[in-house]
Length: 288
View 1: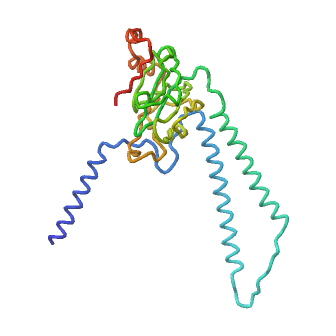
View 2: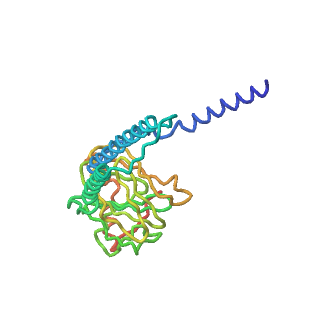
View 3: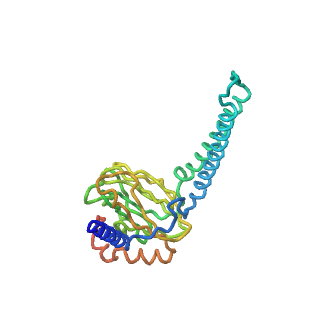
């Protein structure tokens, strides 16, 4: 009886601790069993090819297993029935080889075209430049000020004190401002990302953006761009195992109306008087 009471007590204590531990957890807005909602312009084509491949593989799987089960039943071993030997059929061989080849070529051509649009096409001239540098274990983010230009960045200049590799002689960086683990993008405006890493390989990954890009130390990736078509709160995650603290490397990403972004950026930007007092670009680590 005492053991029963002890087990029940431990059970209810465990349930209580579980409820307390999840009471402040972030509520997931999308189903864990299917794709999260898409909010960017490139996501439509990515989802389309995903569904095409899913339908093709699903229909093929049903057809193959149906034929296999039919042949297993029809040509099962039975007393007095001899096996029939076949040396194949050239026509059938050409058909079931040619069809997959055509399908794979079509998918490859379509996928390559979409990749070209996403990675090789020059971002629009009015795109907002945003630099994101990963580190163990967080995200350094740099935004342009009123001039809309980021200071020149080089991977060889990245250090602990200068995570963005900013060129101190570039006056375009006088009005830049930084955040740590916080990203805010205006909706319906192209965003040109400058991605890099300060220490090990990281990856910029936002499921709702259908966007994934590895970030290798020693290189600044300046060809990744996107345009969010819906507002919302999202999570930027590192999709590379980057160390013991990998599990906590996430950032808060908000897509807001243009006016709200401008208000936010104005509140983060350095004061004009402070910019005039110095002749070099200040390299300031964002508050953590």
